[in-house]
Image 1 (tube, rainbow, N blue to C red):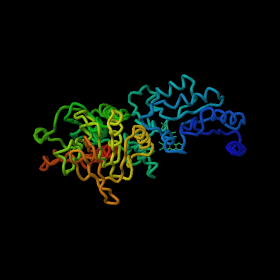
Image 2 (image 1 turned 120 degrees about the horizontal axis):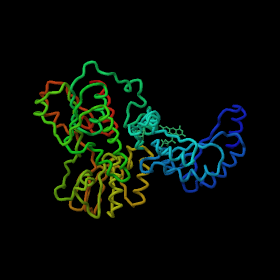
Image 3 (image 1 turned 90 degrees about the vertical axis):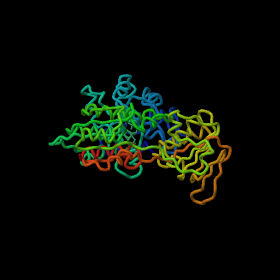
Image 4 (image 1 turned 135 degrees about the vertical axis):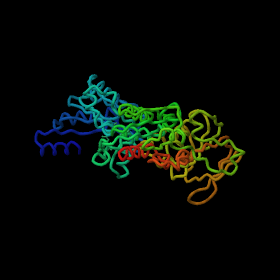
Amino acid sequence: MIREIITCIRSHIGDRVLGIRLSAEAMVPDGATGEEMLEVCQQLESDGDLTYFSFVLGSASTLGGSTHIVPPMEMPADYAMPAITKLTSALSLPVIVTGRINQPQTAERILCAKEADLCGMTRALIADPDMPAKAITGASDKIRVCIACNQACTGHGLLGFPISCIQYPESGRERTLGVKTRTESPRRVVIVGGGPAGLKAGAVVAERGHSVTLYEKTRRLGGQVLLAQLLPSRLEFGGLIDNLHRECLHAGVEIVTGTEVTPELVAAEPPDALVIATGATPYVPDLPGADEAHVVTAWQVLSGAVTVGASVVIADWRSDWIGLGLAEQLAAAGSRVRLCVNGTHAGETLQQYVRDALVARIHHLGVEVTPYARLVGVDQDTVYFQHTASNDPILLEKVDTLVLACGHQSDTQLETALKSYAGELQVIGDCLAPRTAEEAVYEGLKIGREL
Ligand SMILES: Cc1cc2nc3c(=O)[nH]c(=O)nc-3n(C[C@H](O)[C@H](O)[C@H](O)COP(=O)(O)O)c2cc1C
Ligand code: SF4
């Protein structure tokens, strides 16, 4: 069928360029193998109607195969090339390759090794539309590298929203939020908090010509991203902070770490405007029986502050990366892990490809998942849930440790302490309402444009 379609198109378009995008390997059981695809491509090539091939990996026929359509960060940059080059080396037509090529250096390696004639870089250009210009002018170190989180690009697209980027919310909003006017009356702006919201606000405010000082109370910038990047296969998420930090430095933001902003500090040198982006802390529910049980938070486990027992229950109220990632980490370390999610399924709030790659891994590790589970209590060796649809009790017995992944609560301490502050005061990110890094960066941009 595909041969007839191509021949028919060719008969209508004369000698115009005609290419086809194909999956070099379906990556699903019983799906097309590399050898079979080579045969298909050789036939298509010998028909003489095509100008080029465009190769990716994966198949939409299963959820597992679909994860390769827009591969998440656990699939290393360049990972598709070994499978694809088996085809390209045996074909004569020009070849485009796509899949986790996120930096010009990687594309250059592929082209120099003659593994392809052209590299497709989809998310790399959503994250940084200036990437080609920066590469050509020798400014590669200024490129905002895509971290393959899939949150705002394909994540938005699959939900029916316009696409964007969590690191660069200007993408897809070029005519509105992409426009940044330089200020005619520079002000002194203090940003409190060096997480995603504060860093983005700092970079944008400084880019517009204001004088900006950003305070972070700990020694390291990053906020919750420092923890998020510790989840299995999520190290690249930390690139969000590297990119925003560099943008702050480039825009001239003065960064002061290891200094807590207090009302006294503000009073000593009042800024024209103050942006509070102090983030959030773990939400710990008032849980009957918690005193007699071993109850810890996800943050404590991730930071290594506590150890867990051999039998662990994770109460996952958000159905996101944290519950799933901790389940993977603890099961891989040898614990029996039961993951109880409030939602209809584990990872319910995640982009599909990210969710399914994670679900596949916890399935391999034997994690037991209970959906529709609302945490109601705990005692020495039992955790009590209620089924959110039937209201029936769910009892999980022989438990050593209960890990709470119950979301976050805003850190409003500074905002409260500055209630009588007379100057302009803005609150953004999780400090306003706990959500994700995407909303934090978006609000940083919005406030950065408005100040
Ligand atoms: C927002 C978005 C929309 C996409 N739409 C299509 C599409 O319509 N057809 C297609 O073949 N691939 C589509 N893709 C997949 C990309 O072409 C590409 O194969 C994939 O993102 C992996 O490449 P990358 O790592 O350079 O992003 C889309 C990807 C994204 C992020
Ligand atoms: S949202 Fe994430 S995956 Fe999508 S372009 Fe931005 S950094 Fe890349």
